[in-house]
Length: 593
Ligand SMILES: Nc1ncnc2c1ncn2[C@@H]1O[C@H](COP(=O)(O)OP(=O)(O)OP(=O)(O)O)[C@@H](O)[C@H]1O
Image 1: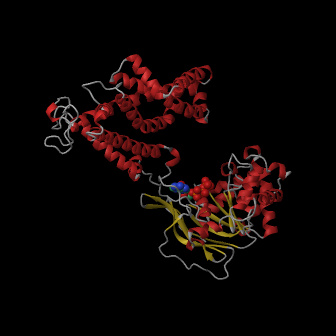
Image 2: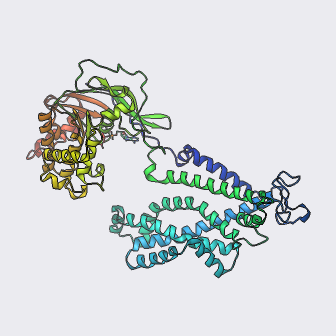
C-alpha cells in the first residue's frame, strides 16, 4: 500500500504577545494598568487643579461637586488631582523599588548559586538574617534609621524584598549550573564570568522577569503601607498611602476621601497581579507548549464525516483513515493522515518509521491521548471490538484506557512517579478500575511483578523507581499495563532506552505475554531488527502516512517502497559489514541514502 507523503509544514508558534492576549484576565489587567499608567503619565498636561493648593472653605466636598469630580479632602484639595499625582508617585516608587530589589537580589542569587561553597553560605546567611525579621518591622527600622521620606521608604522596601529575589534566583542557578550545556561551556574554555553571563543569565532571566511582575504590586502596597504610617511620602508630596493615612481621621464624616485612594490601590495592585500572572504563564517554559489551558481529558475530535460507529466482526483493533494534527491559532498542522491498519488477538503489528514520522501521534490518538490543545483528531475511526472509540463520550473512552487498551512507554523513569514505591504504583493502576481493597491490590501488584519476571517481587515492590535498573523499571511499566488484563498493548518504543541484552529480555517477555494471554501488540519502533524479531506484520510510516504494510517476512524479503528498503539497509548484521555496505552503496549512488 502506498500513499503520497504529507507536505512537511513547520508548525507556527504563537508569539508571546499572542499568548498573553489569549489570557483574558492578563489582557484585562494590561488594559486597566495601561489606562492608569497613561493617566499618571499625562498628569502634568491634564487640566487638573494644583494638588497641593488648599481651600479651607471647600473642605470635604463630596464627589460630583462642581469643579471637584471626586470631591475635596480635609484641606479642600482636589481629590481627583491628588489621586492622579499620587498614583504617579506610587507607581514610580513601587517600580523603582522592584528594579533595585531585582538587581541586587538577582546578583546575590546568581553569585551564590554559581559559586556555592563559602560564598554561597556567607551570602545566603545574610539573606536569611534579613528574612528573620518581620518585613514591615524591618522596613520601619530602616526608615527610622535613615529618616522618614519617600526615597528612604523606597530603599527600605527594596532592601526587605532583596531576599525574595536572591533565594528564587539562587535556586534556579543551582539547578542550571550542573546542566550539561554549562559543563560544555566550561570545557570549551569559557571563564566563570562569561559562563554566568552567556549561559546562566539567559536561562535565569525569565525567572527574574516573572518574579518582578508578580512582586511589583506587592511593593506598591508596602510603599503605601509605609506612607500610611507617615514614614513614606512627606507633605506636600503625597502618594496613595499618604492620602489614605491623612483621610483616616474623617473616615466616618467623609468616607470618600479614604475610599477613593483605597479603590485606586486595589485597582492598581489587582491589574498588576493579573498581568504578572499572565506574564508568568507566557514565560514559564512548562506552560509554553501552545496554550495556557490545561490539556483536556480526551483529544479534541473534529471529524467532518464520521464513519459508522460500529463494525460487525471486526478484529481486536481496526484503525481506519485516522488523521490528526496540531491546532496552531486555528490552522491545523497535520501530523498523521489516512492511517489504516488492523490488529487481531494474539497478533503483533510493528509500526516503524524515522523520528517525527508520526508513530507516537498515531499510538496516542487511538485512545484520545494526544494533548489537547493543541492536538486534534481530524478524521477516521478507531474500532476496539467493533466500537468506534472516537464516537464514544469522554467517560467511556477513559474507562477503556488501561482496561481494554493499555500503553507501555519508552522511558519509565519519566512515567513512574519518583516519590511513590513501585508496588504502590502498580496497585494504583489496578485500583483505578477495580473496586477492591488496598491490601488485595498490593498482593495483586506483587503477583504482576512476578509475572513480568522481577525477582524477589515482594521486596522490590517497596523500592522507589530510582532504586531499580532500566530493565526492571520497564518491567514495572509492563506490569502496570497488564494490571487490568487488557486485550491490546500499545508499546511505544519500549526498549529504545535499554541496552541490547535487556532489550531482548523485554521483547521476549512481551512475546510470552502475547502467547499466554492472546494479547494483541502494537509495537512502535524505529528498528527493523526488532520488527523482524517479534512482529507478524509491519506498517512503515513516513511523513505522517503509512507508505507500506504487510507480513513482516514479505516486506523484509521484497520491500516495495524505497524508504522501507533504506530502513532495512540500516540494520547492521554482525560480521556482514561488507554485505550491509553493498546494500547501501547503490542507494547512495542514486543519492537516496
Ligand atoms: N505537541 C505538539 N505540537 C505540535 N506538533 C507536534 C506535537 N507533538 C508532535 N508534533 C509533531 O507531530 C509529528 C509526529 O510526531 P511523533 O511524536 O508522532 O513522531 P514519532 O514518529 O513518534 O517520533 P519519535 O520516534 O522521535 O518519537 C512531528 O512532526 C512532531 O513535530
